Image (cartoon, rainbow over all chains, first blue to last red; front, side, top):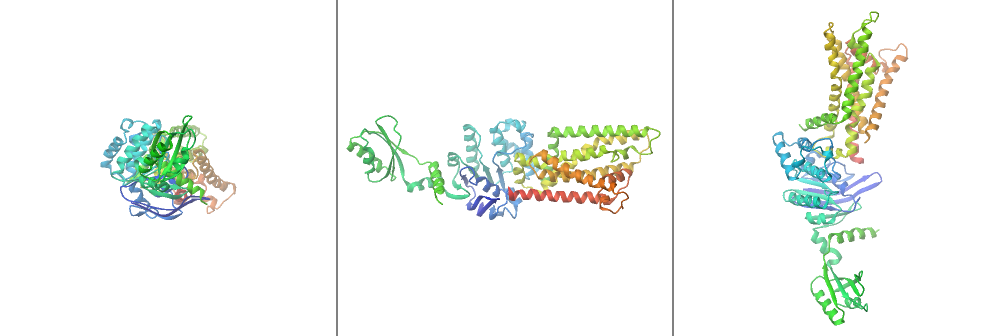
Length: 316
Length: 246
């Protein structure tokens, strides 16, 4: 569906995107993840034909964006960051205009606008002026605009920014639903969002792709597939750390913040599997300190993200 | 054709904005005052022989105030506001070419300019009920008004493409149009000038006087057409340049 090869985009002295290559297959939901200013939006702007690449090629649905911009634009439904809309138009009027602009035939336009409004749950504000709508509604009007011509590829730049948690959940559900029948590429710096909606994640930092894979793969790849176990013990003598470090399979023990005097919380990085936790229990019993908590912390995409983007920073 | 969808939206956009009504009122009032003064002036038995409509078209400085001041105000919003609010991004990522976008915006501006002059159609109707009218000069007067307006609208659109600030766009366009007008005025200062001189060729004041008298000089129309084309071409280039520079 999308093939990006050696894409570079420079603005005067700034290189926003630096030699980025990736591919997206049909019916994938791709998450573009990165800190602010990493080059996510710029990549999407080149993809949608708004910006012209400094070098490299971008092909969407078999058409080169630079050579056949209009063929590409016909395939894409794009929701830019900050959702630009004409504030003086009415919702229905705006969507009808956008549908016409996107060459939805006159006879099908009415139905297309109606069904899109229903899908994005903006039917109740169809006669309202866009400028008077709340942020949540405006966001959904923008999403409806992206969807109205039934595009094969949906490009959403920060689709949930500025929404309240309830609205975020609704938009996320909509994205998951949309991903079943088309290709979606969305950018975000909110990790749970990407984790919930995407089949694959591309992590971008400082204009480069620094990691990619399924959310589960990325998690498994972190710290060599280690499991993180939080151990809470009654530890008056302070010997617990040494005992835990001596257990086979434990790689590292980090003391954490004590929740109350006499208790110690230790973060144990160990080989995956239940055997290590069993041994921790046994060692505690043998060592004579009482175990008050034992919890396996799931590695979040946030850990992956932090690790990848900070490691990158340390490199020259 | 989706260009018509864009044209429709651009034309409608004028009427969403209060500026449109201010412009329409200003043009109607100014033209009304000029018409009144012209009629009053010609009613004097000692007045030179002349036709009212001829004086309305370019015969007074008021005509030029309307054309020179109001046209940049029509076009200032066109591209500048789209860039300012970010809607240029949704517009230029829709399946419509940059040329089509600029063309739709230009035709909408010209359309609004025509609307601005529509109320003046009442004057010849009014005059016709009192005396015989020579229709030719009136039509050529409107033709000249349209030609000059189309040229200024193209220059105005170019001004609007250069900035994201409407006021700055209006000032740039106004400045450029003013220069085009004033250069022509120098034609009068040179004493006896040859009709072949460049200054004469760009002397808009004389152009309009001729159109008002019923003389349709295709050289004038060619001048308006070529300036319009150049300005529109430059506008498209600016829009495309933004894709590279961001």
